[in-house]
Length: 309
Image (cartoon, rainbow, N blue to C red; front, side, top):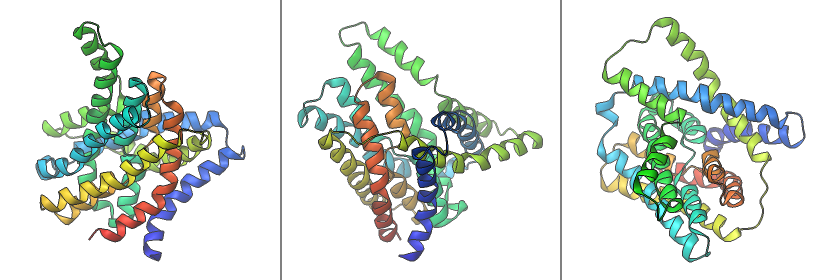
């Protein structure tokens, strides 16, 4: 258990430092916004671009790994949306945003550092394969369903244009796409540019998880207890349990299983709140769910680390 705490606690201590710094006004909220913008729009795109550009695509982009993660992930979206609509009588737009919270795991800010601390940097390649498709699949599905709901009764062409515009204005998707271009064309990144990317990448995760803590300090846990509990149960327990079962049934390697299950076990990230705020719906639920699930994930991630081989 002490080893597990040594893996998890440093990550959550940095999150806690960001939380306390903002909560007690040692670090300004405007600084958090700037730091989050730097990490989300510059440093993390550099990290994902470099990872995809150098990834062995034939080894890690294989159907069994992706199915073990994205099968349960997509199922959580529809279960969350249906649960919000039927159990809690939320409007359709709210239900889509709540489903997105159940679907979008914090695969970068929590998944990467925890997997690296648990199993080493060499274990991250399956994570990068999952992360490469996380934004395109999850944002693509979320935006498609939300725009369809918003534009119900309108011409299908308007919905298609809105979906394409929203997806291709996402810098993470663009960085990943560029990484695939470099990889598939077997291009060499010049050393000077590669060194500059390295500097950005080293700043990405520490700054991002500190900023995550600062963002959480700005949220309040307010009402909507039923949907928040549902999101926590689906995201922290059911999704990784299904991923674990599928990984076993599909005979994934130990390395691939670890990446799939641990990524599936991560709490909803800031993107869940960003998606809700993009459409101005279920923002209180999303903020409360991110805050509650991140806190609870200290316990649930520890449990999954104990279960995994």
